[in-house]
Image 1: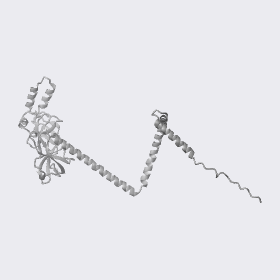
Image 2: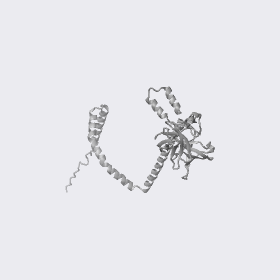
Image 3: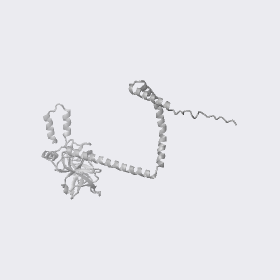
Image 4: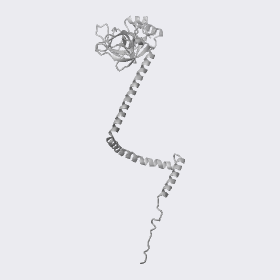
Length: 333
C-alpha cells in the first residue's frame, strides 16, 4: 500500500508572542512623559492634563471611599469576632496598661501644676516656708483638721500657718515627730485677724460650726461690700499680712445692730489639695505695725474706698490732700 503522507502543522513551530513588545513601548512612553513632566513648568500641558484628570476623578474617588467605609467597618467587626481569645486578652492587657499610664501622667501633670502654683505664692509674698503634703483628715464631725507629713523633726512648731496655692487653709495646733495636725480656718475654734483688702476695715475671721466663715466685729459704719476680698491683717504676728482668706458673700444687719453679719467664702480648701507650704517665720514687713494696730481700733473703719473714689473723680484734689485722707483712714501700703 502506498505510504500515507504525513502532514505536519507549522503552528507549533511559530514563535509564541509574549506581549513584551507593547510593554516595552509603554515603558518608553512612560519614561518620556515622566521626563517631560519633570522638565516642564507648573503650567505645562502634562501638568494641565494631570490637574484635569484629578479634578474629574476626585468626586468618583470620594464616592468610592464613602461607599467602602461601611464595608471596611464590617470587615473590622468580622475580624474582631473571629479573633482568637489569646489576641483579645492581649489587647485588653495593652488597653489596661495604656489606661494606667494615662492616669499616671495626668496625676503627675496635676501635681506639677499645684507645685508651680505653690512656688508662685511663695515668691509673690516672699514667704519663709517649707513644703509638706496632706496625708489625712479628721474623721469626726466636731473638728475640721488635716494631717501633714512634717513634724518636729522637720522644724514644725504649733501656730505655724499653712497655705495652699489659693491662700491660707489653717495653722498647726499639734506637732508629732513626723506629722503635724493643722486646724482649718473653717473650724469653729479657728480665728484669724483679717481685713477687707479694698478698705482696710479690720475684723476677726471666725469659723462656724457648719464649716462656713464669718467676719466678726465689722461695725455698721465701716465700708464692706459683697465681693470684697478678705486678707490677713498681720495683727497678732501669726499670719503674714496680705494673704488671701476669702471673698465676702453677704453683708447684713438689723436696725439696732452694732456690727454687720459678714459671711465669707473661703479662698482655699484642703479638699483635693495634697501639697501645702508651712510658713516657718515672718519678716518685719509681714507683721502688722503699731500704726496698723491703731488703725484697727479706729472707728469708723474702712473709708479708704470713698477716699480713692473721690481722688479718682476730682481733678482739683492735691497730692497733699490725698495723703491726708490716707492718713485719716489708716490705709496700709
